[in-house]
Amino acid sequence: MKTLRDLLRGDYSNITKALNTLYNKHKSVSIEPDGGCYSRGNIEWLYLTTITELIESDKQDPINTVVISRVPVDEFNDAEYFDISILPDKGERRSIEFVKWLEIIDAKITNPEDMQDHEIIYRILWEMTLHGFTEEDRSKSKLLSEKILKSIIKEKYGK
Image (cartoon, rainbow, N blue to C red; front, top):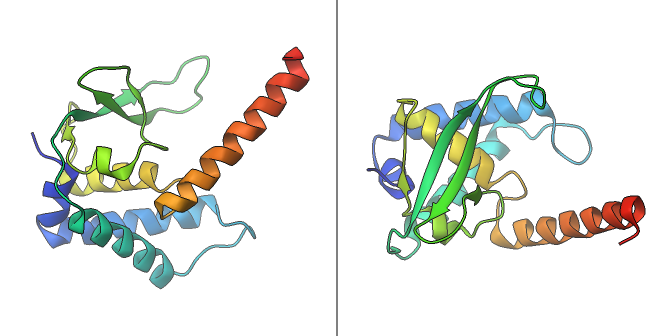
């Protein structure tokens, strides 16, 4: 099984295709704080900086597996999507949104959908950077998300 590090060190055309898809995704969802969109150059720079950091990180023992699974339309989802999660050798499967990057970079990747390498790169990087392009930004976003969730639970359930 391949790892994200293997894919990022492989054929550069896969990174180019993934960057193009990531740019189009950012453009389509306008996730930037002011409702605008970063330029193509900014998006590429942010992702290439992230990719460089990942590739240059110390190699980790592959104790996790990145699981890619198709989630069908159902009563909770009005559109099909792919769930990208991590499954530790010991533990429960969880979203990779707030998992430390070092736990992901050398994890084995399952690919039951027979996705092409550039699509795997795109989907994993999208999930990894959903809350920021650095570990520090992601930590701040996680704390803010937890604070908001606690506030909602307290308001709704009085706990």
